Amino acid sequence: MIFKLQPIGKDYIWGGERLKKEYGKNINISPLAETWECSVHPDGESIISGGEFSGRTLASVLSEFPEYCGTNNKDGFPLLVKLIDAEDNLSVQVHPDDDYAQKYENQKGKTEMWYVLDADENASLIYGFKKNYPKDEIRNALKDGSIINKLNKIPVKKGDVFFIPSGTVHAIGKGILVAEIQQNSNLTYRIYDYERKDRDGNFRPLHIEKALDVMNISPVPEYTPEKNLSENANCSIETLCNCDYFRAEKLNLKNKFLIPADIKSFKILLCTEGNGIISEKNNIINFKKGDCVFISACSDIAELSGKAELLIIMH
Image (cartoon, rainbow, N blue to C red):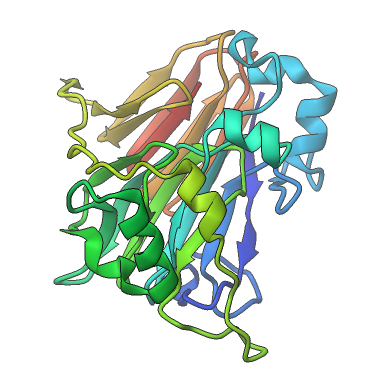
């Protein structure tokens, strides 16, 4: 079973309009900061577009047919896949791990990764601390706003990959467009927000004490994707990230590619460039840049054809 998904949009204050202009997101909110492309999270559930389940939420279908998630995912669908347009800096934030989140928030923690789709010249993001600091010094810096001076700022270019384990202080910088793959969680502890106010003129809340509980105050090692690349005349496929929570690959489709049947895991296809067709038996779906397709764990072999770049995500 394969089907295309319709995303849910989010209008956070730092967002822009590129997801509408460049990725065909016909969502009537402004700014369009994020699109939740594949989500069963109650804060924004993807809708199935076309086929026998058209108009239903992905969450409702996976609840009815849990076998679509695969034998690796007997506790339910574990991921959330987004497109993010940062016209301005996102808040500096940190996410808890599963143990802390389940104990204090009754939900999952969040480990995530970013694949940079585009970045302005001189764009950068925040990724961990510059060095080890005493915890009291971090606490004081959080209270007086000087924390930004202690954080590691990294230049960003198109095609970069960043892995953000829970506990890592981070922020996407202005002028960056990313695909984000993460655990199925919407739990964020904000620690610095550039003294911005929301639409009602209020400062957005910070979560300093919880952030101090969960943050890793040691510098984060630079992430290097696996050097795992296979290539032939029809395509090349590269592993971007393989962790306990998800596996993400980048497929450069030049002609045709077969996606094997796999009862262990679903697959999510996110098209980041180009266009093509995916077919399984008599089910044929056209896709283009910005489209997201869900392939259930019970699917037969699916054939991709066209010229496109896609992220393939599974667990």
